[in-house]
Length: 356
Image (cartoon, rainbow, N blue to C red):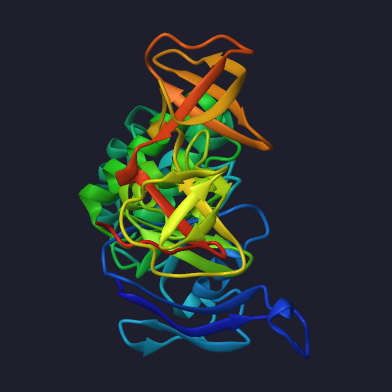
């Protein structure tokens, strides 16, 4: 297992990049502790797969270093980094049995027969494949094939890191939750460093202890799932995480106060920054329908089970609210209030308030 550090990392697919826009990865400095569970989260094209390929050795970065336990591995090929990868599509040998698929990485390294057998059966039981060991892999369903692929990474006890590149993309939705839970359980039992790449916030937030959120080649926030939800450091994080995402509303700042549509808005604390674009951020969970406040008209009401998502129009702006009480009717005129402790100002996208 390894502590992984990225130092002043940048990468461009151009031969002679001349501006920041030419880089698929802007400057990145990161450090992941030995044995942690991490996720790279962001939309398609944000640079997360590029970053994963650099860590694995499939790409050499244009600038910067990749360190495993303080050893510079930037120029080392994948086979010299002692890593395991699980890809979007299962990488297995269809003509082999489940047992032989799991045993292959160990046999390839000359591990003794008894040690191979012990380790294969241990991993198979963890993955609930113990009853399938004699079955040819081609006869299994996609979720079990992906379990084999995961097992081929987990079976080795000498890897520095196991990297998962969108491993549940081809899995049926009803099986994804089960595999996510199983992977989290495996990490807790094995405690090897794992990095999970996905554009699915549910996968990232349920697997990882720390999530790295990326946008346009930039790391915009690193934090626990709770930190990302409760106090996004950037409007992109607030909008990307949550369903619906954070309300991002244009505001004016005057005399240290934020004003939305002529109404002063109480915040979590004092405003600490300024910019060309000033916005209020508040999650739908903390928007209330009150007797007085910001005037709005209800445009849509969606009952999604335990609560209702209400879409209101305040002037030209849409404000989402999640409520558990009796919902208003479409077309009804209401007043909105924001919970102060969960309402903050962003300057040019970045958080610009302190906690009170």
